[in-house]
Image 1 (tube, helix red, strand yellow):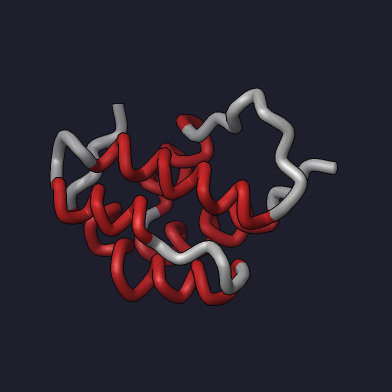
Image 2 (image 1 turned 90 degrees about the vertical axis):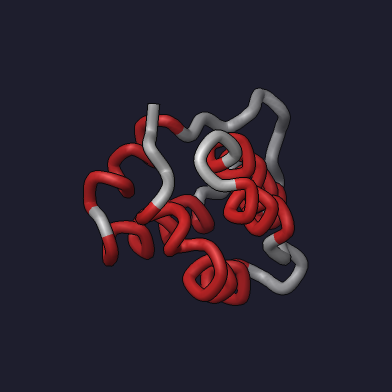
Length: 96
């Protein structure tokens, strides 16, 4: 079973700050072909996505993205995303 809880809640979080950025994430983020069986693997994919996407604009933001903790559940991950990364996504990310 593929779960999309992390993705759904992250889109909601980004939309609180910027609807265009939330829409861009929805349009650009593609799950890998590997089978996902947990929210944790989805959170890791999203971390990798923002690590790649932010790299041309901010290395600090990119490094934060790949280091977000995925071991403590979606709520903790979203809290870290809001506290540590959202400003880079809103301010620096220029979706291609």
